[in-house]
Length: 547
Image (tube, rainbow, N blue to C red):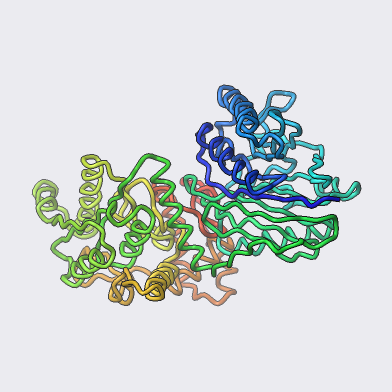
């Protein structure tokens, strides 16, 4: 049996950009062909972008995909790569006309095989069971004398289906194309599961994954090849486009020469890269070059501004300080220092004249007066956005969002995207320290002022205000939120875990009452196993309480 040269093309596609995605496939396929590849595999639904949600239900879209697939097959021949097997994630139709999630194998200007995804996920962020028809037949393609079995993402996460069907005839390689979204710690689960499938089939497993941001999802790549014993013999980096090449000899033999094995960053580094990529792609794919946000000198806006500078470049970030009568001088100093450290464009717009104009008519006091200040800041940012074409980004975090600790329509919750939406407050500090440490290691100025990290958090809407006046310490709050939101523990279970009854009652009351605010919050990248939005769907109007 001859050696099979395999290429895994880890790419960033855009939903609906059929021509652009096809050009990406063509470019990487030609690069793989030039490197001597016999087989080049692209991620799940790379031709359409992923997930396409209800676009799949439109006949016009499916017809356009079919036409683009034909043009791509012809272009591969025209460019001299017609003899390479090119596996492309695509969209097709079942016999009854329902859409299907497929892997099309292109060669000699046509589709020589097509595999339809068997297992359709219907949990968390996925609604595929509602949209697609499932396949039932295995597909094995002969490439350079190697029997290559195909699977798509969820097919290896569940027992049965195509993996079980391939076990009896046997394959020399299991090729899995994926659109697997990032969440903290998921990379380990993927490689462990692939190792189980390699042992089950007594064959190597090649796993190619998307990268890029799509609305509230981030795909991290990290494509890899595992040998039969579960050893990683080649791996792509995360969050970057990559073409991974590896020579595979006959069944049961180790690779003739090791492939490139990229270093795996720790969880904190990966989470930071995920929020950067999520913002970068949301802005880029929606036509924005510049972003604007309010900067207060606090940790949330400081980290969000730093993420924005890394995502779109400091010269495309506008930070607006909006001091009120209660803003401290040290907060303004921290905001100015942040601008100096990062190089973003800095602007000051005092809000007192606007607040006075409202108060002249409304004469508010107490919490309504505090909220007025916060909402004026949101109005200022949206006005700048409308006038200058910037994308407004919100610096709010998951802890505040969970308990509703923000004024709706204020500078912390308004806009089109919220990079820290799925990042608990304690993780905000962790990411800020990580980013500063990364800068120091590179011999650069740490972007976030130390005082923004160390000072007690405050909304500064009244004299001496601190977050701790209204909330438990964030370390405690985040522990309760992890148990109640992500692990879905009830009140009794929370008390049994050691949380004080008064803390449990406060946090649960705040979380349950804030669902309406969360529904109106901007999109933000999912980075944990359970994010607000697609992952956690609760009714706004509900009388159920954890009593």
